[in-house]
Length: 45
Image (cartoon, rainbow, N blue to C red; front, side, top):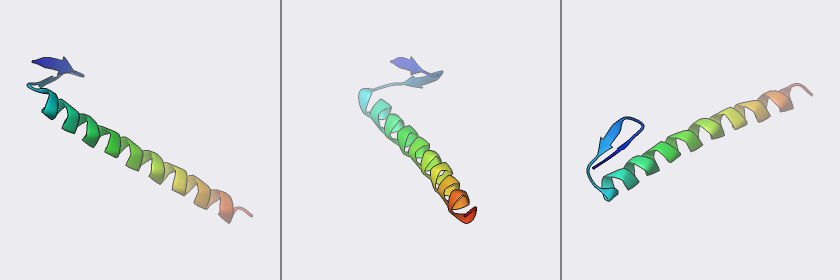
């Protein structure tokens, strides 16, 4: 049993899927921010 960021994880598979979901979420957020930034930049010209 391991505890990561206050979340107790029983096995490695659970940990891996948690990590995958987390990184997907981060990626989505970053992508949205970047797209919005590019959009605003192109509108200024």
